[in-house]
Image (cartoon, rainbow, N blue to C red):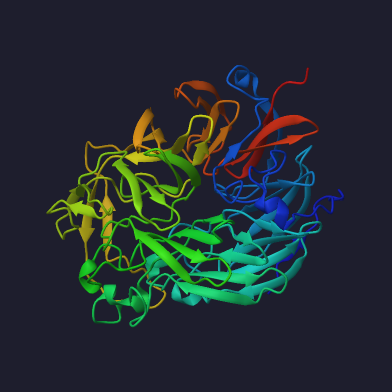
Length: 527
């Protein structure tokens, strides 16, 4: 069944195009937002500075679009050609006039009732090339839409949802390829990363994040067939270095999540970053943050690419605030560890060795009676988008701080059924809290930390010296990038699970994001 196009307004959409040259531009054109992370480096940083620390307190809503959907959107909007393109949970998407917020077209395709996922049916955004938009549908398809009309141009099955696989990540366009990640490790699927032809939807390559016996890393799953259901989802959009022609993608937990008896070994390439040749999908290097993970600490978090000076030498680096509680700076040419330190309370490891392998603390494994371990199941830092500012040279991310009880259970694998063999829960009297953190990637030292009630849900840094983020209580907040001081806050009326972005229209800077199931755009008062 093809998607249904709902024409809700007679507005005319500009036939704007996104070229490969635009996607490769660094820094990105500040008038637009052309991909999930803002640009291939995934900085989520804008050179715009009309809105700055001195006037951000005057920021006010300019327009609001109500989608009418239940729940909270998680998507990063794309902005170009006078339009905003946004996806939503439940296989919805829409195009809005950038000036007024009025809808131009809307796409919807109900997911099959038996399609399953760990955490609802989120969708984190579009990719764009030419006059086409690309999105995934939850049940396992990649769709190309006409950006002007929202009409379906083609739809390709990535994999069958019946085994528990789902698609939620924003694709990434590289050259003529649409790179697509997947989710479903909690159901015992075998993870992969795909590339599809942007014109036809034909699959061009697939890289399995869980190697088979005889392949490099295949001996890290023990003598049995645990690799067949080994997890390793690729459910957050990665990064790309055009000069090196390398894709960098984070991978999720092994399966079953917290019962490692069934999968002896390090379980490559789960809980890792993998570097792949963008043309062929061939493996170049990997770094595993949490070998033989027992706590569901995915390494799917964003991977900003930054050029640093370390020990007096230039370094092409890649960053990650990992769910396991450690922050890492790696060499993105070869994957070697450059710097690492914990950014929250960590009890499962006493530190890292020279190669970045954790030095395990005995007795921190999940158990039948429960084991108290820090951080909790969600991290540390989870999937929520991060930001890097070249103004300060610091990396900004949110964290859930605290500990949980981890339980180990037994069970059998059944295709398409929950396969964590585990659970985790809060401890009485130990409430988890949140924080916004700034880290110097050269030293891995925390520069400042702002305690919060809950972890923030996606960040944006700007040349105005600001870091914007929203929280589950519905507040959009602007922090001073150098000090962490709150400069402005606004209650949007809907819990925020999506990151803000910024752009210019007719010479004026705006900030926009999804709050609940609405889209709200802010600007300075007209003068």
